[in-house]
Image (tube, helix red, strand yellow):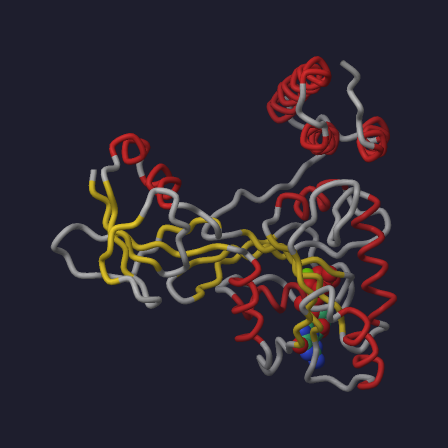
Length: 321
Ligand SMILES: Nc1nc2c(ncn2[C@@H]2O[C@H](COP(=O)(O)OP(=O)(O)OP(=O)(O)O)[C@@H](O)[C@H]2O)c(=O)[nH]1
Ligand SMILES: [Mg+2]
């Protein structure tokens, strides 16, 4: 059976061949595997890719052990309800934003390239903790691991300095991301990263009409939020947008006879069904689930729900196993 590979496969394969860093190669291999149509004709190719992936992982492990070889690769392990990665050119205010959103103290400087390594903080949002990752500035020869951070993030905040040429900076960032296979709009070459645009330094003097032109040009495609890390305008809206864009829901479980307590949610992807939630909470729940009762603001007051019922944010479930 012919493989019938889509054109983007060859595009990504080319980038894979050109990539030098094992971890970058690994990212491309993962992408190739997700692009391949899954049928009999591609089974051999899928197996080959999986072998390559496993060999590369071994190489990376070895590199980690033998200090110094292969360059340094920085990555940030995910924590909390989602990982938000700040993306931007030098001096746009990434570190300042991390500091405003979280308890982190990332160095802020009036000169470019202040931040050299990723820095992490946890943002409290309602009863959740969301991870925010401050990154070094994006520039032409940025290291491959910086794109690794972007690729790994659940949500990218593309930050622009309101006093700069917004369109030029945004398109420059988009081009740089595309060149490393990180796409923020629907594209034939792979998955689309969730993102929104943050216009920072709203407190400072700026060209109002240029800002309006930018907003008009992009607002149908992307959410655009103006903020200031100095006077905190827009920060509440930004936090809410982070939660919305992460596409997550909070689920509370209660035990029979106990009152509803909404303090420690289980965070799940939007669209999760009752049975998937049961499995997430405990493997045995899925197997043994007899029925479940649901409470929420939308009219459920303890009614039984089907296993394929799609859960909503702030649902309260009582599992009966
Ligand atoms: N007026 C104004 N200045 C800001 C704001 N946010 C950051 N700045 C200033 O912009 C400069 C750069 O801020 P940083 O937070 O270091 O920017 P960065 O994007 O992390 O910079 P790099 O790490 O060099 O990429 C500093 O002088 C900040 O005080 C803001 O909302 N308004
Ligand atoms: Mg910085």
